[in-house]
Length: 260
Ligand SMILES: C[S@@+](CC[C@H](N)C(=O)[O-])C[C@H]1O[C@@H](n2cnc3c(N)ncnc32)[C@H](O)[C@@H]1O
Image (tube, rainbow, N blue to C red; front, side, top):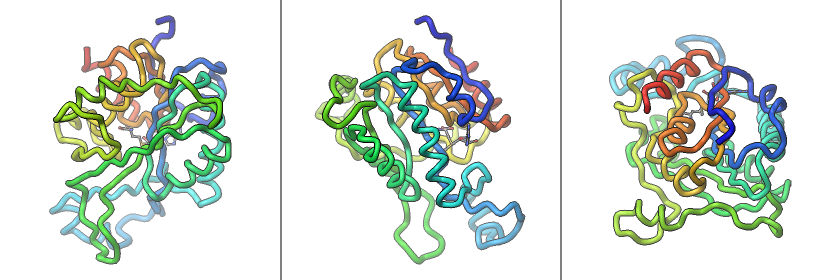
């Protein structure tokens, strides 16, 4: 592999523009979902003023500045980074993007508008998701991953899907289905620091093993605590991660250095 895997501290909107066209095999990423409503004010709102949920039950509401946009700004932000991904990922490379109902339809809309082939969406069922404390709706306990290919609906071909690898990971050695029952990130994956939306290694492992090959190069423009780069490293895939928050960037460096 010619490319030296790395993670960098920076803003993806600027850094992606510096990368060469067709220089990555795939993009696997977990962008901001725009589900926070960060105001910068402390101790306001039901969450912060509710010690039972916040302190006793350690309810981890995502309330981050990096995850707060107006609707239009979020759409434009998503379109901007996706346009760069379409440019730097090779034709027929896989593009896998995490989301919830807050953002996944916007991402799906952009992919369809650009006529990208959508192969599947995967439902991640979090059976131990935090309860809904407003009691006004069903308890949100799923996330989704859209899998698309960097080519048009008609022309897309030969995308990577390691069918047999996926079969091996199922308990009955039958076809892997697109509903994945995987608990939220376990404590032992958080020993180098805390990130509010750190993904479990198990879910990323399926994506890397299923949708990339050894020595492929994967771009993750929102690398957070570094789970996607880490699982690439473990599985001998190349990676390029970008994270703009120094705290999370340092956390991901520690995680990467800790793995052989
Ligand atoms: C949903 S989290 C990713 C979590 C990651 N998958 C993990 O397992 O730790 C999104 C990350 O994107 C970062 N981020 C937000 N906007 C960014 C930007 N413009 N450029 C680079 N990173 C950004 C945030 O700081 C956050 O850590």
